[in-house]
Length: 493
Length: 128
Image (cartoon, rainbow over all chains, first blue to last red; front, side, top):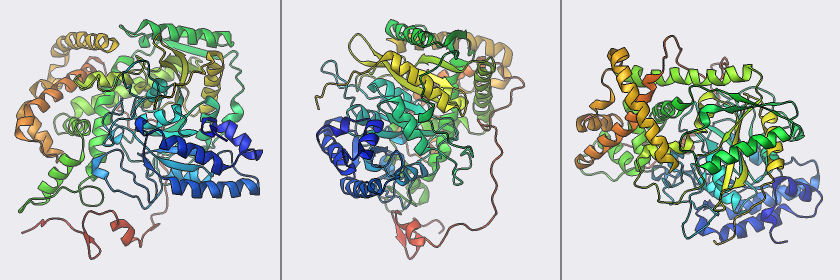
């Protein structure tokens, strides 16, 4: 019964139902893999006992029959999700010791479906980062390796990506504010989907930028993403932006038939200085979709280049407001005060000690762009540009385009520490292909499509119409089948 | 390598746009980012309630200038008559009855507080 941790969700579901394996065996296999993978820094809070209790319950439910698809599936949960009685600190020192008295809606839905939580996963602090290097827990490491260098799994959902790629769990939750599901998925050769804004409830997910944040699954295959997404989404009265729409059976929509579908190739995504390998992969992807019967059309999304600067106004602005709650009063860390320190000193010392440099930087940028005198010049202008970016997509979809194909990232995974001395803006450029999707509220999925010449995975992104995740997943399924990506990282950890 | 190339592209755009913006929308631009001094950085840190030591302020001001320089590209875009986005999905927010739905959980509310006493959050003296 070894190697059960390497199963996909769909395989495990079928074997659980056929009584070939039990949820407890499956869970034990994952827990053993986790205990042998500390070098990856993926799991930062392990919940072994809880997992075995949940596995027992899942086996009982499976024995009784009529269990949901996700029943008995062991998952990793990103540290951004509040999990009842289990450390939930958004990889920040300021939430050290925080054990929520409640469960986030998404993780509760997964528990209700019978899934098993193996533990909490590493990430960039407050989901701010693209390399998992801003975490208070230390770096998560990419299981892919081509030389002596330790590579980043990407970020912010770096622990999730590393854990799924290394088969420590069958799948993981991620969150995506500017590319935090799709970029790490591409860097580690897995699938990650950010659904339409409003599909998944944000309740109980530590807020970064509320108008952009969305949760989504990170899985080994497109089919697994379809199965897991269905269990995660649905209306929630506790999140006023949660959409009251029926949740389709996404898996049933995976026919692989994309004949007659129109796929757009946006010319603005052909960035100057883009590596030839990324460019080649992109056109191969277009060929694969064409061969599968889709029509490939050139499209224009004229405001693309302004997405990243607009994002770096809007996201910090919202973050500065959301993170005002960390004041050392109600939860988390409080600085040790000197004699005579008043409440202002308590706030200032607590926040200086509790937030890392990138989080402090973004809070202060956000504070600046929202301050009197600059609100119009920066914040309102960025919101206007956001309207134009969304309209770019609306125009393209109105012309009959079903999905848009782009690279997922501007490069393959880079070495941990390689960007340490770089300007923060250089790190921000990692999200250049993904951030438009958050600004427009659209669904986007990263599909592993090939390897670069050094042997590292590369992904392509598909962007779909709002609320049409099923159609998007089906296109991704066709791309996945055509690409036939089966490479796995060699175990070194 | 690709990142450097893109950065250069960004810088080119920035130069072009600065000229245009000065001519066309000089008044609206107000001299925003060029003026980030150590004093402004100190003021922003104060507003954000984050203690920044005096000797760290010049570097912080420089970082702000780099990031705001990148953001300044937005001035190239003609946003005349464009509404600022308030909600990405145009939907009417749900309403509910204005009634109590939760409560009586004082112990749970206080459970994670760094300092809670006699059923309250405790903080340093606020009034003399």
